[in-house]
Length: 360
Ligand SMILES: [Zn+2]
Image (cartoon, rainbow, N blue to C red; front, side):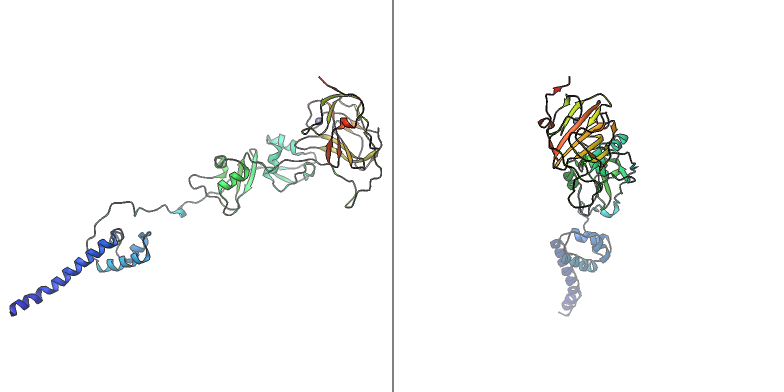
C-alpha cells in the first residue's frame, strides 16, 4: 500500500499539469486563434496591442494573460489576410495646388471685354478669377490687379470639409474636369482637398458683367434735381432710317446703319450722365453717350467715333452731341440707340415718328 500511495503521489502532480494544459488548449480554441497567433508571434503585451485592431478590449486582455502563461506553448500558424497591414492614411501627403497665374494691372482704357480679348478668355472668367470685383463693367478700378485664369472658369477657395462632389455640383461641372486641371494637383485615388487652397474649376462661371449708366453727375446722395426735363417726345438721333437690328429681348435698342462720322443729335432735352468709352458683356457699347431726360427716361447713343459733350452738360433736343462710328462690339459703322424708362428698355420705334426699312 505504501508503494501504491508513493506512486499516486508521484504521478498526481503530472496529472494536474496535464489537466491544466488540456484546459488551456480548450480555452484557446473557444477564444479563436487569430489573437493568440498574433500574440505568439510577438512576445507579450506590446506585440498584442500593436497588431490586434478588430477585437474587443476584453478579448485582448484575455489573450495577453494567456500569452504570458503560455510563454512556451506552440501555437498554430494561420494563413489569412486578417492581419495584413492596413494602408496608413498618414503616409499620404496631399499636395497643394501649384498655380502660376498671370496678373493684369487695369489701365484707364481697359474694359472687361478688352482684357478678355487680350488673354483669349471670356469676360466671365475675369469675374471667375476675381470674385470680389464689381460686376459693373464701368466700375473696373484702374490699378487693380486681376488674376487671369489660363482657361475659362472660376478660381474656387476650398472650405473646410468641402468635397469635390460638392464643388462640382456647385458649379454644374464634372469632378473629372476639376481633377483633370494639372496645377490643381489632385492625385487619384486620395483626392484630398486642403482648406483655403484654391482650385481652378474649368467651365464654371460666377456671372457676367453688366453695364449701367450712372444716374447722376456731381450729386452725392438724395434725389437728383435735374436742371432740365425732357419734352417726352423723341426725334431721330441720326438722319438714316435703315436698320440692321431691331429691338428685342436680346437687343435693347435699334441699330441704324450710318456712314462713319455722321452727326448724332440729342433725341430729347436732358442732362448728359455718361460720355466715355464703356463696355458690357452683352452689349459692348464702345464710345457711349447717355442722356437723362429728368422724367424717368434715358437715351443711349453707342459705338460713336466722336463725343462732343461732357458729363453734367445740359443738352436740348436736336443738339449735336457726337459722331457715329464702329467702336466697341460692332461690325460696321452704325448708331446703337436705346430709350430706357426707369432702366427698362423700350422699343424706340414706338416713340420715333416715320417709316423705317431693313438694310439688306
Ligand atoms: Zn445694337
